[in-house]
Length: 307
Image (tube, rainbow, N blue to C red):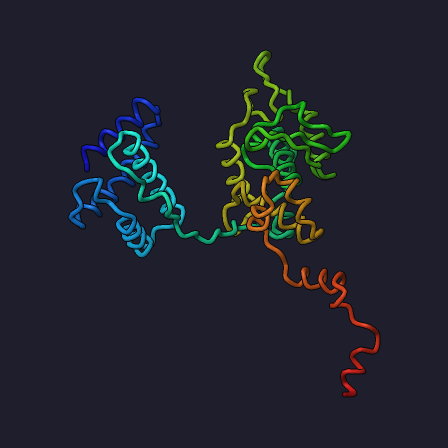
């Protein structure tokens, strides 16, 4: 059994050219399978049945392994048996019909409107502060992902129209509005952006460092950490918290899930439903105002009380 696993791992490295990190993940998941089968006195791959896999899956789930980790392990085992089949070493794949239990997706932490106002109250009287203020205002104003923000070029911004052209996941492009406060901060930043930058080093990136190079995702994360401390936030503000705050505040104010989906660049609305949280009282008000059976006629209460 172990010899076949070693051959498969060699196949992943030499033929499929997977990275060492990915190969190590396969090795760990396949080791779980080999150890379990040894405990069950199964020494030949042709002896492996679906119940062996379900047994192991149940054991791992009971030990606290997350649904995502179980799904990854199942994928590794499934592909291993598919490879064994291609080598004519097994006739069927015992993992083919097995699916991992789903883990509940946790909502990321967010900031309420007052907390966002506190975080964004930056005294932008220096080159660095002007850049950071514009960057954070745009981050929250347009609900961008960290990679989207870092990847913006000057030509992506149209301040006269209040729009930003964003390249998201899968290189899908969307156009997102930029709020009034963010536009003001961006104009202020662009008026000083080239100051002090050595000739020939200034890049086309919207947000740059003091040497003219594009500001990377790690640098942006560190700036958020800096302002978390500077603004006296209760906990560090992470990039995703700004995107989640944007989605939550937009949804709570508008109730338009489809519009928020478009603004976030989600391919599926189910992602938006999980990613955002709704105020139940807001939903109840929408229901009372919109549903024909929820609207009360005048005098209805008095009629009921008289019965």
